[in-house]
Length: 252
Image (cartoon, rainbow, N blue to C red; front, side, top):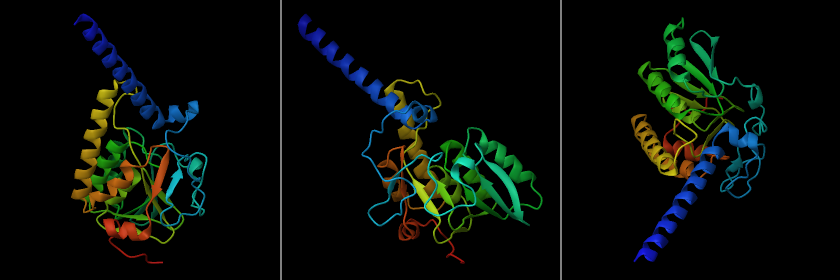
């Protein structure tokens, strides 16, 4: 009996170690530190972001600081701000660009509230970032009845589509890029695997509730959940229509 108990204990210990390793790799794979360390991808090799997207061939390696989209945006991804920056474009039209850093939700909400004239439309361009901040800011955008746009040749990836979904009116121009993938929702990068998985599950549930609130079909999450953090799944125009992202047809 003692020998059996020892064997069970060793097996459980092995499972725990395996979970910790996988959890750590998942966390590092979705963090900038993982990219800087050059950790290998846990997914099959995919074409680079600069390569054209075709139906059934929509997953691309996601290295925002290295690859630009297939068409030339207003600014290359590597030159976008490291946190969201708000700038007035014309009248009540503003541009919101950059990575979504922790704390950006509250900060940008303050800027939008203080802006004169009050914003009516936000042009978005972002490689993504903090999901929690994106959800908070998206809810404010909806409450303030602000519209969102992604312009031709520009992009909205990772957590950025949640910002876009907050728009009371949503416009996606032809040859604009909207992409989704998996996220890490934990507050710490050093957590037991069980807690990391719990954070991820809770976070994905929050995202699905948010999408429903915004009138977006949560079925889009099938592509987010099956695309690793170091890749991006670029949604085709017909998919964007099906899931309810645009409320207005391209005006170009």
